[in-house]
Image (cartoon, rainbow, N blue to C red):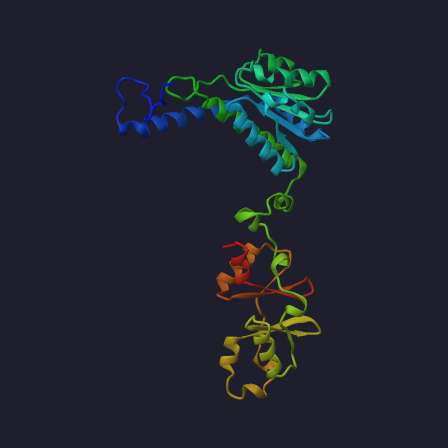
Length: 333
């Protein structure tokens, strides 16, 4: 058996100059951009129908395609699922060997094929027709088997591929991916899928951290340092050091009236231990609501050059304390 080549095989007898790389890249991007403009111009009532089908499904959206269309289909399924439309990818070849059992009559099928004649999709198409499962087809061939059999046919512009030989899936996959994004975002907005719901599906990583609320990170209850207006300085110092925050919010009947920081202590060193909290506290302390995003808390702390914010409810009642350290540890920067 011959050994595989150890270097890439040339496609032409004479390779192009490296200086042409940017020109080639510019050509590809502009060609695909023109194709996307054509796609936007071609949107019709079929797009409305497809969104209505996706909105009305009681089950999941089954997305499938073969080859490069399969890679795009996986991404579309992931985008739908993360924006409020339950979806998953089914490989067309595996579907023909038992995975059709994953598809129920409550589902919707979204099938991708540039030519509309992909042989591996035939069993999926036949299955949807047999059990009256709604089928949305995406193809550039309006007269293809896929689109003729579809309940909703979405036709891609017949734009040339961007590769040098006009054969590698480039423009066509870009169009399919963009149309999938358009469907997912349109349905997302029609559902009223907002930031809170998005956070539910994206709890991990930096993206999830951006949607954390102050209430999720703030310190409350016995762990919260606090003193009353009439508290003596020994009690204030115990709260500031014993609970490890270096600050002590001051309250009157639970309502926030001030805060004592290390700076306040230094400014009042003379006779400090004979003073009360009300004599030392900084009035109108910076605060934030528990429902605010942690990113907003970070912005306020950075602007004010402080390391903690008091958390108050609508009646200015102290409910918690959030520190810059807590925000950074959660991944909010």
